[in-house]
Each structure stands twice: as structure tokens, then as C-alpha cells.
Length: 381
Image 1 (tube, rainbow, N blue to C red):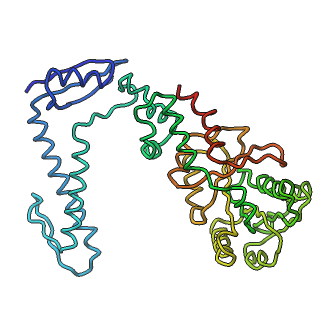
Image 2: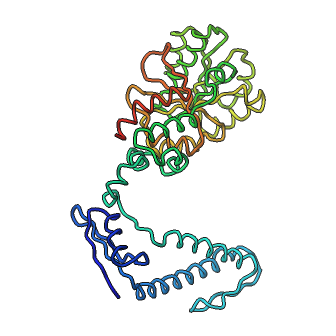
Image 3: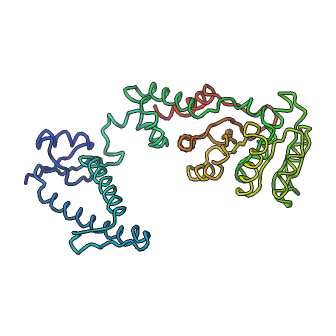
């Protein structure tokens, strides 16, 4: 068995030398990083390695078969099936079990075939040419693999600046809501949801101020949906006096009845439990129609991927539009945009923490794309 050890600046260069000396059918035995260089060991006759691999695969198949036999198929009631012997042979189960096991083995074989010949490495092991590609640059600043794969046709065969601009334009077009202004104006009930500290109370006031002053609509009220003790020190009342609109307190237990009794357009700052919120919003939509109910989930810019993912999972069933707040404190991150793309949500509103009047930007693809270019392209250069 011929074993070749190659030291190079990156894995790609090492692989080129290995193929040149051992041929295309060579196999990687191991890789190791020493300082700034990569050490790669390869062979063109991996008989012993393959023998070991086969033993591992047999052992793995026996383990999976045993686990499936003991757990998955035990739920089929009294249907009889046989176990496996120590060698993993003569495994006999009912028709359902055989089909499931065959499908699993086929999927596992397909995965193994895909991995065959791949070389896994960290960023330090990449060729300098690969390090400068559009995809790697976007990946480094936080865009997920899902998002990059979704828009891969916009990244291929482009220089960095052109590729990033194409990616951003396509992403902005996908993430923006068709008509956030008219959706807001046409809805009778606007529920503002989000976690405490996200800025949803001030955002509710900004929405009310926009409708009351910019659109000259006096038939509007601000409401607080929550428990009785949350009404005592409520900033929403101060905002209501500031913009001169009525203020209402709404309890979850009689929300449906009270909402139906109010003729004014309602902007509702929601602090009720998530389960109560979902039930109330769904009931109102069934009563007046989904086109008359708008839900906006407020997210402070700079939120973590985990926080945002959980939030959108909580409220996903009521189809919320995303409003990013506190843009004077943080920029919207690539991680956040990736989660929104994965959850198939839309961004409709951008705002900061300052003034109430005239402080909301209603997004379209041009506005969002320009914001992303101003804050992302420089990181990719």
C-alpha cells in the first residue's frame, strides 16, 4: 500500500498534488493542521481501511436493525415478528417493518454515497480562491446555508460586489410585504405582538399616530390587551394623550365581546399570554374576515437567531408581518434575515426608538435592498 503525505497552504492545493501523484482514485486517510499549513495523508490502495469500514457498517446495520425491532415495530400490537441473531442475519418482520427498514437503508446508502470523496475542513483549510467567493463572504457575515442555497443562482459566476448586490436584491424582493401601508389602513383590528422590552408599546403608538395624522383618520383608538395589573403603569395611556386618540383596556376573558362592540379602528398592544393571543386573533379573523385583521410581530434589531426563531414559531399560525425596531441602536443582522427567509415571513416596517410622529418606514423591496446594501456590502469587500 502506497501512502503519501503532503503539506500545503490549503486543502485544495494538497488535493491537487495527491491526484497528480496517486491518481483520481486515491483516498484520504487523514488531515491535520500544523501552524498555517495543512498536512494531508492519502493512499491509492485502501484495502485495510475498506475492510475496517465494512465491519463498522455491519455493526451499525445490526444495531439499527435491533433498535427498530425493539422499539418502532413493537407499537404494531400483537403482529408477530422475529428478532435478529448475533450476526445480524435472518431478520424477519411483518411487511410494514421490512418496508420501513429497506427505506432507511436506502436513505443511509444515498447519504454515504454523497459523503464519499468529500473532504471536510474549516475555513483555514480553504483555498484562497474559495475564500474570496461571494458565498463564503456572505456565509462569514451570518447568512445561513438555507438562504444561500435558495438564491444560489444569483451568486454563481459573479465577482464579489455584483454577486452580493444580486443576492441582496433577490432577498429583499422575497422578504418584503406587498403593501404594508394599505394593509394597515384597510384593517379594522391591528394586533401588535412581541415579547416584553421589544418596543411594541411605542410601536403601537407610532402606528396610531401615522394613521391619525398622516392619513387624517380620527376614527381610531389605542387598546391594551392584557391582565388587570398591566393597566396600572401603562405607557400606552401617555402615548394616547400625546397623539390625542382614545385609550381602551381589554381583558383576555372578554376580549372577543369587547372588540366587537367598538366601532373605531383599533391598534392593540398585546401583552396577554401567547395561547390567549392566538385564540383571540383567530376568533376575530373568523368573525370579520382575515383581510380585516392585521398582526405585526415586533422584533428589536440585533436579536439572536434562537430568539427570533422561537418568536416566529410562537406567532407563525396568525401570519404576522415583521416590524424591526431600535434601528438607531443595532443593525438588522444577516442571521435575522436568514431566519425570516426560512420561516417565509415578510418585513413590513422599520423604526428606531426616537420620536413617535413620522418615525416609521414602510418597506418595499427598494427600501429594504438599499438598507441592506448600506449595511452589508462593506462587510463583504
